[in-house]
Amino acid sequence: MTQMNDLTLRYSTLRRESQKNASSQAMERGVHISDEPYAIVKKMDIPGNVAGEEFWGIASYILAEYPTDLGFQVASAFHRLSPGLGYDPFGKIMVGMQFVDRKAGSSCLVRVSFAKDHPALFSYLTERDCPERTEKSIDFLANATFQFPSVEHARQIFPKMFVVPEVKASVTDRLIEIDPVVGKYLVG
Image 1: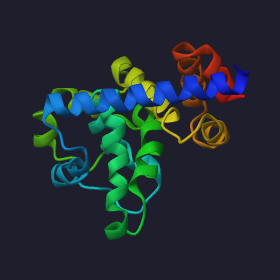
Image 2: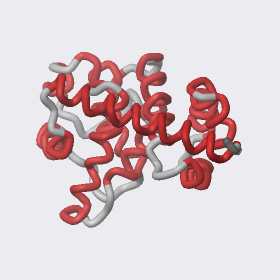
Image 3: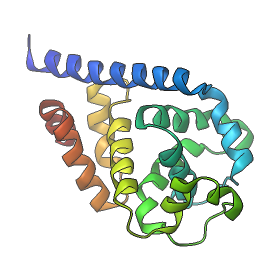
């Protein structure tokens, strides 16, 4: 087997495992992935067509409420809202995910009563130093890197995915932890 075939197979396996995990997690929790974005925007205001970093509140909600694999699929399903919004909130959530640590403690469009009923979310939104949130955001973004259609596509997109350098460095390390061969290839 050539090195490229091995990379393709390894990448495809990681992608399938994540999607399978997300399906199992959704079934266990009674979550209909395609409906979740609509349920979330009923609970939280969507920031509008603003810079992606302003989506850190929704990103924090996804981290607090879902396991990583399911969380990525829920975030991806936000793409379904694009026609009504006039922009793709999924891409903005991906950027917002990089700002969950930087923005924590600042004002966010989340009803305080709602956040207080969700202790993990309240913590993620208000605590400046929250290692659990940091780890979950790194896991989320590493998982996202394995969701492109192919290993080549992921390698082309990876350098453009990040606006926060320290997040890129942490995700790079996590990719290499997950699969050293594929991780090193993806990050060039």
